[in-house]
Image (cartoon, rainbow, N blue to C red):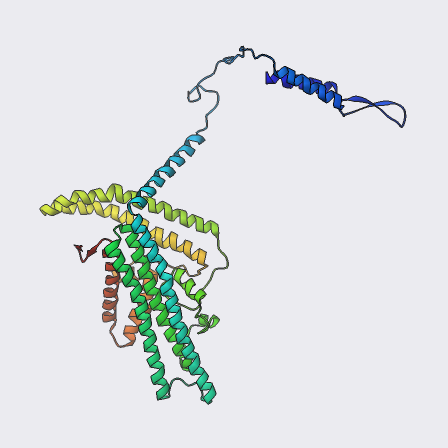
Length: 434
């Protein structure tokens, strides 16, 4: 019926499209594309009248042969875009259900983990206040030298040396209390109150990283203070440090950048990239998310069942079956480890470095070509390697330790940190569950 109404309206418009209009210039009548108000009113009344005509149930619905859309003899290839969208919605809903379910089960753990994360800025602010006091003390020493007219040849006056070193010992003690208190609070909270292993692991990992960063911040600024008060030692400072000389680096912005920078070693200045490539960040985060899902599926579908099936064999001390299960588990463990390595060191750290404009992104080297175990440990995790070499190994060698003794201490220190990272969230200390 609507089709007939539109047809009649078009006919009426065609009839009144050109109405005669007298041309005042030459007396002739010309046609103009205007419609009078009267014609408009008549056409509208006609349309309203036709719209009230009685509908006739005679429309030919089946007017030609047609095939079903999914039949092989259909005339056009159907699009399955709607099914793809449906599958995406189903996957999102399923994962949201898991998120809600896990949140309901571990809501208390999530809240505690968030509180532990919120405490970290407090410890960083305390480290900043401690270093601010230390820098003010160093400025006071330089000011007294200038007022007395003495040449800046280092801390040679016995009284000045005694007072300066006493202050530095107090500063080192304050840093130790602040950093260790942050790690201790997280360790006790995770061990006794957080039962979700993933939340506990993330909380412990963040606490250990911040503890290492605060230690590096304290050690580096101590040597920068020493270089400020001893001009002879200032010549050994790297050239890049001249861009932000001590104590201009003692700011909250500088420390906050170090908190998020993908490194464990503090420097007043880092090489920076000129801009943030957000598409690069999106790709790296997508890789991290995809690999995380893969690791979760591989662990739940393959690794966990093999471990559960191995418990009875281990209890019976069936050596042959145990070896078979270990070889079976080694393959999936290697795949999970490689996926985790790529997700963290290639995808996540590069995304974080891009956001922070951190220029030095050598988070690993070609460890897969390592000729020895020592080379492997030095190349697969360069942030930790740089920290251990700069703040543990080199100072011990400088104090007269042999390279083997210093390496053993580094190995022991690394083992303690790994025990905290693995044993505390799983409530297993040295293989004993509590």
